[in-house]
Amino acid sequence: MDRRTLIAATGGLMASTLIPQSSEASEAMIIRYEAMPSRYTAARNISVWLPADYGKSKRRYPVLYMHDGQNIFGASHAYGGQSWRVDQAMEARQRAVPGSDAIVVGIWNTPTRRQDFSPAGVEAAMDEKLRARTIREHEGPALSDGYLRFMVDELKPMIDRDYRTKPGRDSTFIMGSSMGGLISLYGICEYPQIFGGAGCLSTHWTLLSAAESYTKPDLETPAMIQAFSTYLKRKLPKPGQNKIWMDHGTINLDSFYQPYQIAMDQVFKARGWQQGKDFESRVYEGADHNEASWRARLHEPLSFLMG
Image 1: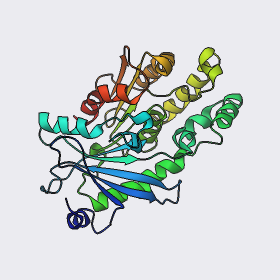
Image 2: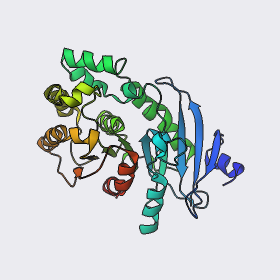
Image 3: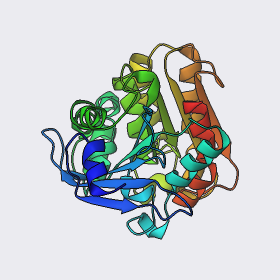
Image 4: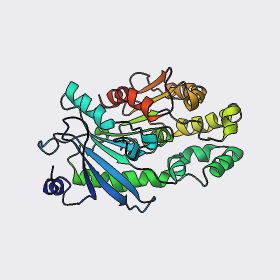
């Protein structure tokens, strides 16, 4: 895809960078928008991955929106030099089932990542002590409502305007890991009419990362579980129209998530969500809290959410 084709593909909007993919024999491209401005959140980079046949076909594609966008494709900008390689997972899906690929939009994080991804509705449901501690550790209150408004009111309309997408809920997905898993869950609860499925890998239910929280895991666990339960009982969509994938490993940070996940599974079931149909909750023995672990199992949430 050359620059003229890119202009046609994006409805006349010129992106900052056009990057050929490095995966073997792939004709896919990543289009990068540098410091995309917003009325609701800090400016940030956006990477748009187009499937190999995008420039040749007239097809419309589902769209997967992913947080921590610098970590999902190549290694050059990824945390610790490890990426999810979502491009390879999408290409594998297309080889196995032609027509199953999608456009992937990577939303890069910023220095306010923890505030951007901390669910404001959950923060509001906390008791006063836990809320104060969360705000103190995150260096400010949750900014997630603004981040989601950026996604829903600014980014998604641009993507749907400038690319051949299937814009409906059943073809629009949101995914992330750790706190990116939290904002994905929060996003589908706040905008169930926009996002048909949410992938929440290694969901960071603890919200806090201070050493004391992990050396004494019972210190805040009941209060945090209560806050999440209160929020989900109020905002979890009715079953049957959305899908949510949640998982965690058993090593290091992931080893603290089990009591939270068990409690949240019960909330989902009490709300009428059927495991295996409406939501999935998995434990991966030996999996760690890192991109290599998420890359290894990415095909499973993609299959559950996108068919």
